[in-house]
Amino acid sequence: MRGFDTLIGQEAVVKRLQQAINSGRVAHAYLITGAPGSGKKTLALAFAQALFCQNRENSACGHCRNCSRIEAGNHPDVTIVEPKTGRLRIDQIRRLKEKFALQAYEGTWKIGMIIDAETMTAAAANSLLKLLEEPSGRAVIMLLSVGPSMLLPTIVSRCQIIPMRRLSRLRIASFLEDEYQLSPETAMVVAGLADGRLGQAIEMASTDKLVWKDRVLAMVTSESGRGLEALRLAAMLDTEPDAIEFSLQVLTAWLRDLLLVASGCAEEVVVHQDHHNQLLAESGKYDESPIRQAILQVEDARRALQAHANRRLTLDALLYQMADLTSFSRVSEVYKYGKSSRG
Ligand SMILES: [Zn+2]
Image (cartoon, rainbow, N blue to C red; front, side):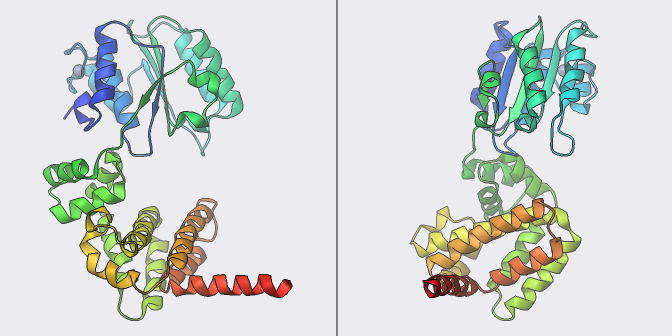
């Protein structure tokens, strides 16, 4: 699949951009919004290809010189600006402006793509604003961001907003079955974990991440010795940090599933449908409150890890607690007791 064809389920925004090309009304600035893995960059690249493609009018052939160079990230008139160490800085925006001030190398379009635009420093954002205020000829800026609320309103107001859709679970699952040969059961679980984001689903299906789903679920459903299993899992994750985020996603989905099952929701709405019996058995063991606290605890651990807390200690502590969710009710009792004893 090439160009816009790779944007499964995003027909509305693709049509909008194609109409803009057909009618010669391409805007100077677009803001593409959506969660990580929702296809923002794929859309931006496909749009750039459609503007430059030598074989097609409003789409991309995927194999001409221009399409290939854009895909490889080395087209002289397409500049991609990405955050370095978490921030987009003013010198990066300045370099983009310098490029925009020059003639296009190949005399057609000049395109600037700003990835994770919400990470712009205030200085970078103000510098970009000036560029947006003085649009020139055939130049297009594409800002990619999780949402408009994270950007200066003065920037947002100069952009056409292109929101990426969340896809239905069934749509993602059937795509995974067709393209990645997943079993229907696994496809539904992966689609549930991806939460509407096709890019995330593809990443899970095309890497060896799924083995971590099995490891996490083996721990939380183990019949005995869960504490030991938890520490073993923490040790394994410590040596494979790339799997941590996914494993925490699996864990959070498991905890949410427990709440859903406890409140009598249908099997179709839970993520881990392939473990429905264990979910039923486990949800009977706990009240709602420790499960809710456990979900918050996973979030806390995620934040701590992002802030470079000691990885092994954080994982040990988190997973050991997850091995026995009643530990959360004990914590809250101590807390309550502490409060009442003070008076
Ligand atoms: Zn082409």
